[in-house]
Length: 199
Figure 1 (cartoon, one colour):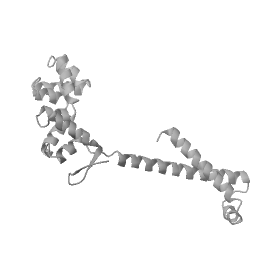
Figure 2: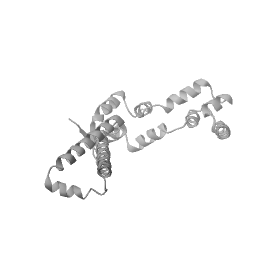
Figure 3: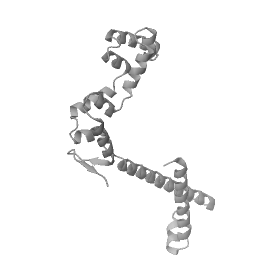
Figure 4: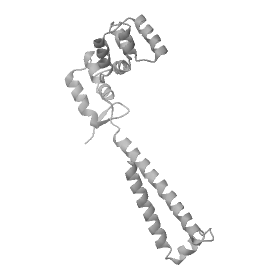
């Protein structure tokens, strides 16, 4: 909920509270009850006190409604991830999914070492320079002459690949299977791995 919507909701709740309070003052039974709230000798003191109480109640209700709305949005948008759908449909194994997800976490130096574009020793040396100078490792590797601009761009592209792209490159998934899995994102996967399409 935006701050403007929250402010509007707060003022609406506060206004309703004031109207209800004023209306209840017209009933004799309620008048006796509200006399207990007259804790100050002057009417202005009591007015300010009642206003603060109504404001606190309106604020608490606004926060409660906002928290409830956020919780409902999270529950409604909890769609299964593509990897879980692929495993549930038997298109890949959990181990293959784990390996592909781990590949998404590789850092620039690791990607270049795996592709044999730099050696582990060159990566270690560049990381040492990075610790001393706090510069980006890609710039350090270029300055040391260990990697070219094209190597760095290639590695950055590899790091930004999506899960489906990694699985396709590994030959674990066809384009058709990936499109099919993506079309199932509007479904639910239960604890047994069964996929239920939402209507």
